[in-house]
Length: 321
Image (cartoon, rainbow, N blue to C red; front, top):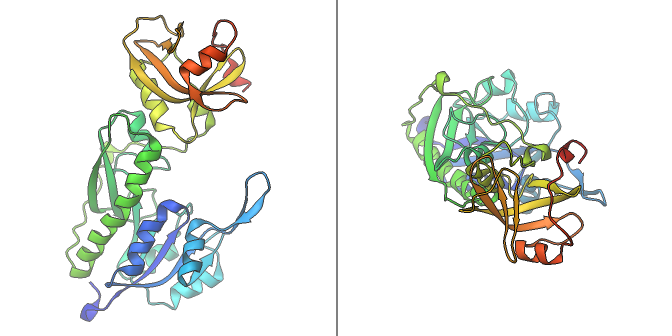
């Protein structure tokens, strides 16, 4: 707790829209004095390469919050000077995309804290939301940890669980955890202000990693994975990076899948009048919503009706795709 019940002088560091509920919480919290925010520089976006500000930058500009945009927070003299001169109590980090060096980690009186979207030490890394669904978990959550030089390895100050629905997608869980991050931060600030935070070391024997995902992770291999594993992959990687395989050399995105009771061999396709069902290493899946390369997204029945000939999976096409 700050002396004499004074507000906690806080710096926020974050970049995407995911950071906004937490930033909004700091802005409105009567126990917080938000000194300034730090985010990434503006970037060219889309085919037209128009310059866009990160969501955190746009929010700060619209709300009149002091803002720094920097490629490297650890080497930016203006940011470092502002931290040194602010008598900062806390630095709060959420989805910032930069590691903090020792100088910044040591600067705040109360410490630097990171909001992470898993129950640590499970799923340290960049993609904890997707990995929770990939692995078929039914529960995940938000952890607030006191930052150290090792990624996501600091002592835990607060953990709050969130249930994962049976058909919930990565995008849906993203939205749920985005809001949970803000409400968890509110609870953490109350504890911090009252001096009631209890720090719990992470159990290193229970660590798992959730590394960055890319488009190749979305390739579906029906010969090697069970129906539940592919079902979870489709959910986890929707809307990004998405899942796919190849039909006659054309990429078919799988937007939605359902477990089927059909008994098929791995990669065998049952091409009914309304349903597209594919056998897996064990079990089978109905690919209920798909998008063929160059076409609009559609139900599986629409794909079948508009496709000439038999649907055949193209082996090995992922390497050239």
